[in-house]
Picture (cartoon, rainbow, N blue to C red):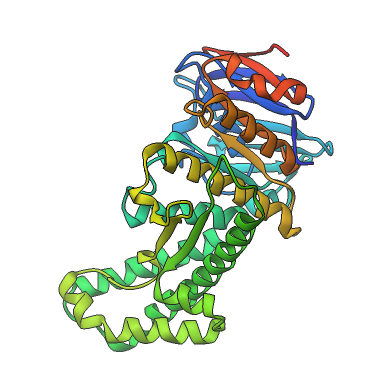
Length: 370
């Protein structure tokens, strides 16, 4: 089981210094709004690769008026020790240590996989394609941490292509070289997305019927659809490169790249009604979103190519009735990883019984109460 058994913070958000000794059970954080519950979830999210659940920059997480950097340290259930932080002595870079030795974000991914749900994600189905694409890519990165590097390479090459297009005159050889890099990274992204979408759909089919409705997922993107058909990397690369080459004039007129994996959308159907998720009620969308997060965690466990995930659920239980809360807690306990949840009142977590620890959070302080 993947679990944090000790969490220590220094100058992180509103915490000057904090040390929590935990016993490996699920963790329920309760307290008033603004007390620092989400900050604790964000601290845990720093233990994996990426920028965490708020996508904040390193300096943004530094406690106000703190003199140096910040640190987040954790001990896992297997006694491995992780430390991450803002290293102000090396140009405000992220530092990573595992068992006292310098490590990388890729090393973190071998130890910890993290899936989260925050209130900011509630509008994902009614938002634009970029919202759904970010949601999907978060799940893909939890399964395939290298996806983030492919996306970064793609974005960099696309910025170079857009700059070239804005000049109004494109050197073909130069454009070919840039587009080849875009197509290479884009093909990798598309294959990653298709792989994880298939894993999510398979996990959805194994989940129980009832409180959190099942979804039917599809990817609206030429490269991703080719990957889902089983096309190989070379074929997808060639299609992307050809598309970029033949759309230069159109893209030059627009001043930007109009086709590619950066335009992909995640289509989600609310299976009980057969309607697109964007047309579901607010309550149906919330339940559907929770179901997708649970499926993502379940797919990670079923994949067997990494540790069981940590789940970070910010205010996820706040708008659920007691039966749905109890169902959520039961599913979390079946997943094999540790879940961290937040809420304003302790009673919201009664359905956990003795399967979770309760931690009261109050203005940068946290006290275990059971």
